[in-house]
Image (cartoon, rainbow, N blue to C red; front, side, top):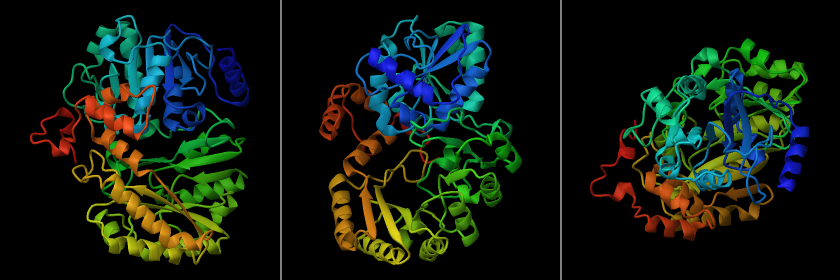
Length: 493
């Protein structure tokens, strides 16, 4: 515990933005991963600011530390379970087991039904809850689905009026974005933030985050693109572009670097004007995403002037046929143009994201991907990241099968073999097919997947996941003869 306290003191000394206060309503805001990952989460930081904006609320952070033993909060060093509300922000499917570990190390029994009425109310929010809340259902008293800007103030007001778990749950039942796993058989509609509550902007700056010393700000929420594999359009509602003057007003002029965030950032109407203003302020910046069909020389030169060493664009399909299937709205000419513009602007390296294992994928599609990558490499060094396709709920691909671990591994090996001799001109990084399968199970699974995760606290690997899923009686719902399960309701919507 002394070592953890010393580590927290050192991190606190290097960060900017902590809110130190005392208030009658105590909230632990926890992240089921290490400090650096949690402090790179804009949603986590936004929840922290919203909670502490309430005069009678104090929210203190806790993370799943690398060190063994119980956890303490960063602001006061109190035990995380010494709170009225225990709120968790979870972003990724593979953090499901970390959620269980977090609850245990915070001194809470992970299963909702085993906790006492006097235990903190466990709230879970974040991107995963909007994608698929059902694996979280065994653990959470309440799950927030949608934008926290709308839900958090209502939850605090409900607790302010009730102050007791069952009365609180009675009060919030039926609110948009509030899902009570113990009481509701269907998910509620998403809570969508009003434009005037945006932008979401960083509360913290720290060199210890995954994006060191970077002020994060979301300039748009939602996505105007129709890509069929992506959840952004469904999860975040209609596109809300934050006016340029409001974005600039939210960015402190003394921060060294700004991280601009948006699902389709280069579709933001004022992306060039914003970039130019930051260059004039002499602030470095980076983009969360670049659309190959939106990059021109002017934008690329602004990115270089802003300190970017490389930029990333997504092909998201090994062939034009498959990109058309996904409604990606880019073609080979867009990819080559983006690479050419990168070279003309002085970038020596660019990153490309690809997906394989797509529905109807053939050997000819992979061959086209290899040819396109070689063509891109004529313009600079290509850092190619290959990810297996993971079907998600709320998309048209929900019922598509995961391609399989062995087929995906075989396809990745084929691509690597064809491009290996072109190193270092082409660098390849691939995402594990085995963990992509686990992600697919969690992305489309029900409460039993959460119970499987409960069995993996001490040892988690691919074999352990398969064994745990078998032990809890999991079966692929898409293979079930009568898939009459609540978490299948409304899929593909």
